[in-house]
Image (cartoon, rainbow, N blue to C red; front, side, top):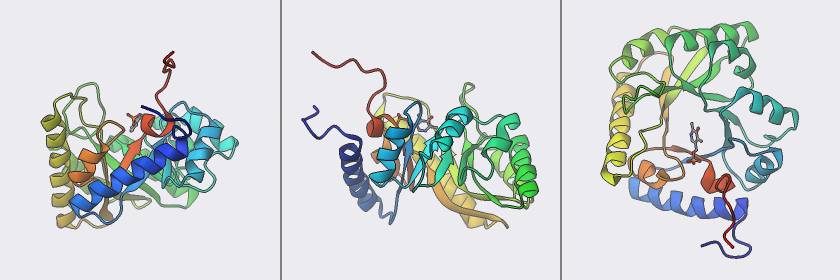
Length: 238
Ligand SMILES: *Cc1c(COP(=O)(O)O)cnc(C)c1O
């Protein structure tokens, strides 16, 4: 599929932007953030993505994030933390990530609040919802999340900016869309309740395989890895 000269990170990002714009137009969404999910890609690849104009870079692992921070890989774009975060690693992430997308429990939110308070800052976060009710995934269950939200609203150094979800991997097109649309409904319902200290601005959902579907269902932030950086460990065709 790749043509010569078109299979670079910046060319991929340009193609992704076109598809994002088309999906956003269909949904009537003004602006959709493109977060490059860096995974194991190194500082040079991240810098190329930043130069090509992604809106943010997402990291899954604290250690990798710290290494790439040391190499100034993110200069020019906000850093988001998108992976599973253990409470004992909170102090490395708070204040360094502009947005922690993957806040999946009340104890984690409290720990982030403590750390942010001691730094004298407010930390922006998203709450991760386990929309597919998968045992292997973290995140609040849809029915637990409102109660948690009320408590998190009372943590002064934490600002909830919206919701994030990683729906179950499915090959059935309509199933994927159904989870996205459920998430959008929760996002809208929660926004209408107008909790103090909580704004429902961001709905982060959609990855390489399904970002156009996610945007069409109301996502305004997609996290894209392999479609930006190329498939990992792909053996070139000979
Ligand atoms: C890896 C990852 C992504 C991107 O996945 P791709 O399929 O490579 O686009 C998005 N969100 C999270 C939380 C991830 O871990």
